[in-house]
Image (cartoon, rainbow, N blue to C red):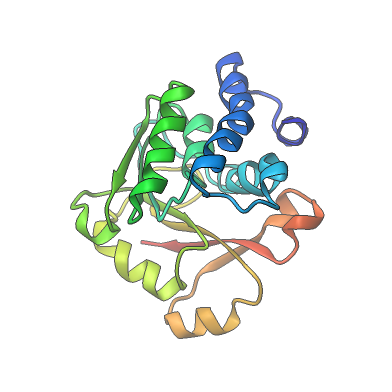
Length: 207
């Protein structure tokens, strides 16, 4: 939790409490349903929570915005972002039911009111969103193909027009070329200069 407070100083007591409960909850659930790699669970706040909050550091979603987390897994980046933006509506979707169970249980345990978790592929949801977020789910071109029809045009953030914000790592040149898109890349290391974030990016594609 200290590493979160190193970069963010203005959380409410409720947000501090919610973030503070995540480690115990994820360790407990990870024993039953493996949603985080064993080697990463002890670095939950850096490698999962802070990594997710790179999106929040770049993009201030407006109150009332609707955001979908594609392939949320155990709830990243969706749960940290939902704690960060309590007035934003988050839908966390995954095609694996047991992962959605973990998301639902964690959200209930920390009384996270602005999260809905659904066991579904994103293409089947049939709702409209302002932003989509994701982390290491699929190649950029596939992600954009899945979500573009469900994104409405507009500007529900101070910094960016509506679109896709995804967390990716490594050399993305081939993936970007194959996608046919012209995304904007923001190095996570420039936001949070921690060794584990070298060669990791927030990738933004506007609607």
